Amino acid sequence: MATTARFPFLSGSFRNNPETCSPTIIPFLSPTGVHIRSRRDPNRIRFLSMASTLISNPVTTTDRSRDSSKRRKKKKAQALTAPENHQNPNQWKSEAQQEVYKSKFLTALRQVRLSSPPSSSSSAPRTARCRAVREAADRVLAITAKGRTRWSRAILTNRLKVKFLKSKRQRVRVTGNSRFESSKKPRVSVLRLKGKNLPAVQRKVKVLGRLVPGCRKEALPVILEEATDYIAALEMQVRALSALTELLSGGGSSAGSSSSSIQQR
Amino acid sequence: MSSRRSRSRQAAAGVSRNISDDQINELVSKLQELLPELRHSRSHSDKASAARVLQETCNYIRSLHREVDDLSERLSELLATTDGPQAAMIRSLLSQ
Image 1: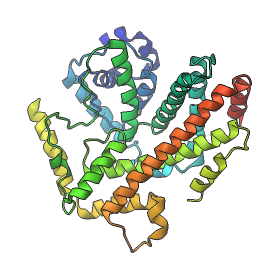
Image 2 (image 1 turned 180 degrees about the horizontal axis):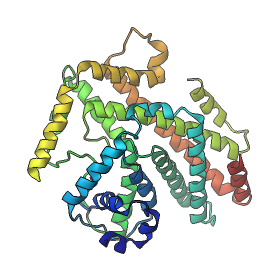
Image 3 (image 1 turned 180 degrees about the vertical axis):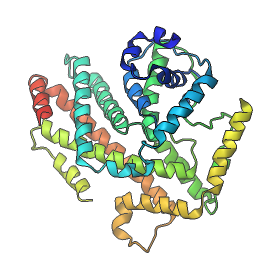
C-alpha cells in the first residue's frame, strides 16, 4: 500500500487491520482540513496519540469511495460496542480516571523536564516551560477523553496543525473539524432556534463556543453538550494538578485550599 | 462535492431546527447542575434563565482555565527549582 510505504513505522502497530486503518489516516492528514468521519472509532484516537510524532508530508486522498464503504462497514460493526456519548460526563468524577490522567501527565512532565535544560533561572525559559507544562496538561486531558468529544479532538488536531505549519512553513488553511464546514456559511442561521432568538443568548452562546475548543461554529445543543463534558474534564484536571503539586512540593503548600473547595461539590 | 456539502449543511440545520425546546432546556439544566454558583442558590423547581446559565458557564470555564494556568505555573517552577532529586520524586509518585 502506498500509505504504509510512506509511513513504514506505522505498519507495525496496525498489524491487526491494515486495510481499515489507512482510510482513517488519509483523511486526517489532508491539508485542506480535518474530516473526522467515524466518530466512534477507537483506533483513530490511538493513532492520534501516536501521530504527534509525525512530521512527514500530508497524504492526499485517493479512492475515497472504496475507503468510505469499508469505513461504513467497520462503523456499523463498532456501533454496537461503542459506548453512549451521554455517559461521558460521569467518567470525570471517577478516581480511576484521575489516576490515569496523573500517570500520563507525569510521563509528559518528565519529557518536558528533559527537553528544557536547567541552565538559567531567568524569566524567558520559565514562561516557555510553563507554557509547555500547560500544553502537556491539556494534551493529556484530551488523550484521556479518548476522542469521543469535539473539544478533545480539537485540542489534539490543533497541536498537530501547529507542528505541520512550523515544519512545512506553508499556509495551510485551518478549517476546524466541523463536518459541515463552509467558509462562506453565515453563522447566524445556525443559531436560529425556537425561543432562543434573543441576541443576548446568541452572543453568550458565541462566547461559550469560543471558550470551548473546537466549538466555534457549532449549533447551540452541540455547544451545550460539549461544554458540559468540558467543564467536568476541567474540574478533574484541576483536582489532579493540585494533588500533584501538593505531592511534589512536599505536601505543605496552599494547594490544599483550592483542591478542598472543589472536592466539596 | 458542493451538492454533498449543501445537503449536509441542510441536515445540520435540520437537526438544529427539529431539536425541541425541551431538549435544550434539559441541556441547560444539566449545565446548571455543574455550575457551583447556581447549584447551591437555586432549588430544583426554580430554574435560572438560559442567559444566566450561559454567563455563569463562561465565567466558570474562564476561572477553571486560570486555575489550571496557576497550577501549571507552580508545577513548572517546582520542576525548575528541584532538579536534583527530581527523578527520585517522580519515581516515588509513579510507584504509588
